[in-house]
Structure formats: structure tokens, C-alpha cells
Amino acid sequence: MPISPPGSARSAGLRPATAAVARTTLTAVEQLAGGLGTALLAFVLFAWLLLVAAASLIGVGLLLVPGALRAVRGLADRERARLGRWGVEVPSPGPVPRTVRAALRSPVVGRELAWVAAHATGGLLWTLIGVVLPLYAVRDTTYPLWRPLLPDEVESEGLWWWGEDTVSGVLAVALLGLGWAALTVGAAPRMARLQARTARWFLTPPGTDLSLRVAQLTASRAAALDAHVSELRRIERSLHDGTQNRMVAVTVLLGAARRSLARDPAGTDELLERAQDAAELALAELRSVVRSIVPPVLADRGLAEALAGLAAACPVPCQVEVDVSVRCPASVEATAYFAVAEALTNVARHSGARAATVTVRQGDGRLVVRVADDGRGGADERAGSGLAGIRGRVEAHDGTLRVVSPAGGPTVVEAELPCGS
Image (cartoon, rainbow, N blue to C red; front, side):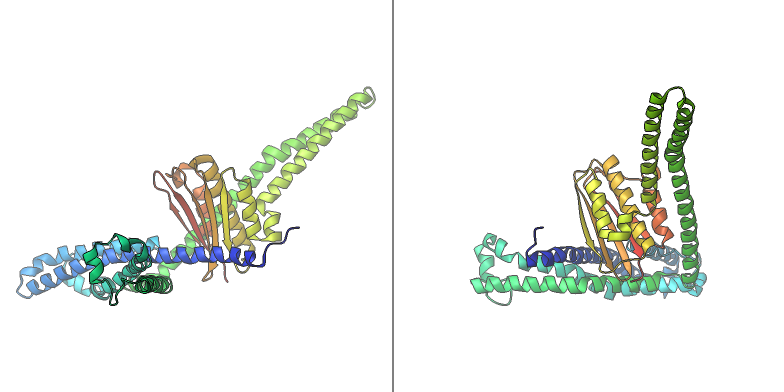
């Protein structure tokens, strides 16, 4: 058996980890960029609110207060929707108070006004830093490539605080870019989490945490029951349409062989051979049904080997990257396996894709499963593509499912499952 070089296993293990860090950083920068958009809107709205407050001191601005409150609620709901795309949904508190007196008594309005002030000042600076860091990293790291394109007068003025007209100066700029990149990788995810946590604290209506959690658990319990019933129906249908019909055929053939045993021994041998073939087919179909419940490779060799088998059987070329340090509970692994199996089935049947990627990573007590393809997109849960079944399985484990499939592609199906590790 060929032996891999000592460094090959180490490099193979580093590649998924590097890809996971890159995805985490890009996701964090994307979240900060979205926060910067709402921060700019909050800055404009905050300036308008200050004008309305100043005008209200002389009575004129009181007429503008209802419209200002509606603008605050609209921006707050926009931020709630943005936060919901990256985590647990933040519920809207309902209609805006119609009178100034009711607005003054409402704790929700006060928290929203405080969020606008905080987001327009510190939040704007915070998200701006998070977005500028990767821009600086790209600019400085690539400086040796685009420096020759600069006009001579710009080149002579110097873009940094040292002279970069020498080889050492150019290398210093590139090293600075690497420093910006390292700072982005280390700081961007933390900055995104802090920004989201602050916004959730301000924008979550008081007293709704417990009721929201109860509603989520109720929905998860209903999804678990629906998934259980659907699975029983699938197994029953598979046994009825396949194995049961084969066993009936075996019974009929054995009865015919028994009746022809005395008068036609040669024909009896043929009937017994056909009965044996039918019994073997029934056993094969029964094994297939059993494997569809919990694949043996999943229990014996783990999630990585099971997913590799799915990728090998997929007619679309599929790459698998699994970064799982410890085994998850069997039910979580089974849910991840069937989610990937259904997603790859959709890729093969509906997407028209030329390539697909399955990525699994573990961290912060969550198992994140991501299936992406370069197909035509347009996947819809309501069109019977199997996505609804994936969502039911995932939500039955108190997980979340995100499907992004614009027309023209690509399609990304990402599930997060709590794995208790």
C-alpha cells in the first residue's frame, strides 16, 4: 500500500481549516458591511431626529414626531431582518404608538431611539473599521503588483509615511498588508459578533425572549413529530412497494413448485430457481431500506466517510471537506447525512450543475453543513424539491436551515445543528 509523504497528511488537514477561517472572515466582513449600510441610514435618521427634537421645543416639531417614529421603526425592522438572516430571528414589536404620550410610555420606542443614537455614532465607526480593514489588506498586499502603473508624480509623492520607491519600501508595504490581513482574520469575526449582540440587545422587545423560545421549541417539537411520521410513511411505502411484493412473488412461486413437484420435476427446479432469485431481490431491497434508516458506514466510520460515499455516488463531480474534531451524537450525524443526501439528489436532478461542494465544520457547539453547486439556481422549498424535508429534519434538532438560490445560481444550502461539543 502506498505511503503518503509525512507532510501530505498535515497539509490535507490544514486545507479545510484554512478554508473554514476564510469563510468565517468573509462572512464577518459581509455582516459588518450590512451593518455599515444601516449605520449610514441611522446617521441620517439621527440627524433628522435631532432637528425634530429641536423643532419640538417650540411646538412646530410635534407634527413631525409620528413620521419620525415610523422612520425609526422602519429602520429598526430593517436591522431586525438583517440580523435574522445571520442568526435567530428578532421579532418585530408590532405597530408604532400613534400618540406622543403613548410613545413616551413605550419601552420599545425608547430602546429603538437609543439604538439609532448608538448605531449612528459608535456603530458607524465600528462597522466602518471592520469594512476598511480588509480593503487596506488588499490594497497594501497587492501594492507590488499595481505600483508600476502609478504616474510618476504620484509615485514620487509617496502614499505612506516612508519612501516606497525602493525594493525594501515596496516589501514593507506588502508586509503591512499582511499585517492588515492578519488583523482582519483575528478581529472581524469578533467585531461582527459584538455588533450583532449589541443590536439584538437594543432591538429585541422586552419580555419576548421566553415567549420566543417557547414558540421555537413548540415549532421544533411539531417538526420532529412531522419528520418522524414522514419517515415512518417512507419506510412503510418502501416495504410495501418493494420487499412485500417480492415476498408475495416468492410465496406464489413456492406454491407453484409444490404443486408441480409430482408431475413435472424439471419445471419445479425452474420455479424454485425463480423463487430463490425473488428472495434474493427481496433481501437486497430490505437491506436498502435498512441502510436508508441509518447507513452502516455512518455508524462504523463516521460522517466524513459516509459523505465521501455520497459524493462518489453523485453523478455531478463533488468535492467534500470535513473538519470535525470529535464525533457528534448519532442523531445529529444522521440528520447531517440525510440533509447532504437530499441536497445532492436535488443537485443531480434539478440544478444542471457541473460541480458541487460539500463542506462540514464543527465549532462553538454547532455542526455547520454546507452544500453548494454552480447550477441554474431558482430552488424553491414550495416546489417539492426536498428542501422542505431537509428543513423539517434540521428544525427537529433545534437547528436552522438557510437556502440561497437566486435565478442563474449558485445555490447554497446551509444547515446548522447543535452538536453539544
